[in-house]
Amino acid sequence: MSITGIVLCGGRSTRMGQDKAALLFAGETLRARAVRVLQALTGDVIVVGRADQDVSGLAVRVIHDPVEGLGPLAGLAAGLAASPGDVNLVLACDMPLASPLVLQRLMELRGDHDICVAVIDGRPSPLCAVYRAGVARVAQDLLAAGERRVMALLDRVETKRVDAAVFRDIDPDLVSFLSCNTPDDLERAALKRRPPGT
Image (cartoon, rainbow, N blue to C red; front, side):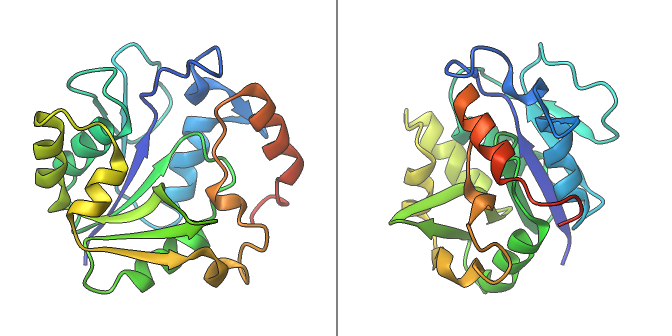
């Protein structure tokens, strides 16, 4: 089984007010932090971003959204299409507290499903999840039909939805699934940060 990590960082960061991927969190950019989390599980990591983003210093493959402004489904489709891996660990750069242990468990729980996502308070978390490479074609078909929601992809293929309670032994507060869209979100995440190396 070959594994590829995909970091999504091409969003417009409208609510953050600046490119969130370049923001510092605990001494590293959110982009670099997401890459490091995935590199704990695989040596093959792809960063999907906008053409105007500075990704210097990252020893990974970088691809760009073919059409900008179409949201995370477009970035996901581009990353999966470029991936050589059978299994893909997808992580949005605005989830700075994501744990490799959580992604590892999602991989273990996937079974034969196309996608495996955690469900927190009734809502799936599709940007810290595991995807089979073949899902790229379905994502591209959805985009061609004008669909922009990642949730539509989850509904279209075989998706395993896992109650987030199964992660509490390794992530008691489920901070791996916390996304930061505003400066206040980022401040709250900093307060919840685990000690280095956990």
